[in-house]
Amino acid sequence: MNIDFGFGLLRSIHYSIQVKNHSFRITKIQQRLIKSGKNYRIYFTYHGHQFLGAIELETMKNIQVSPPSLVEPLTTRELEVLQLLASGLTNRQIAVQLSLSVNTIKMYTSQVYSKLNVNRRTEAVARARELDIL
Image (cartoon, rainbow, N blue to C red):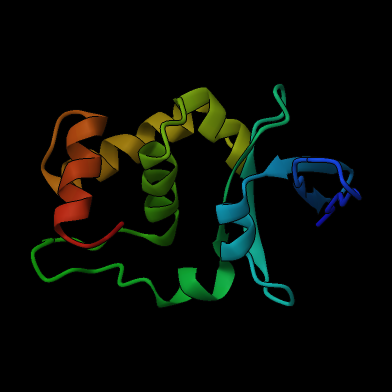
């Protein structure tokens, strides 16, 4: 975290996060949510070098993957794709983030839609929120 202080001058405070060779500007709220000493899965865009978010790896293990109203539970990968869908990423962006092909992402989204009994990504996100998956 980089913080600029000035004497008698009004300066904005800049928060940033360093991930491998990339440095991302983050908001104060995002900075408060990220705790030092924890392991996170970081989501960002390669082209715009924009920070999209972070999920604590320990939290991902504790997420209830099989809510009682689902006939078939979501796999860990399906849940990860669903979380990225909810963040507004396109299939191509999700494919880059997960190092998979676009066709594989389409297959995962199709499986998610089927398990949630929906036809569109907006419906999938709404249904997942109803079931407290997201």
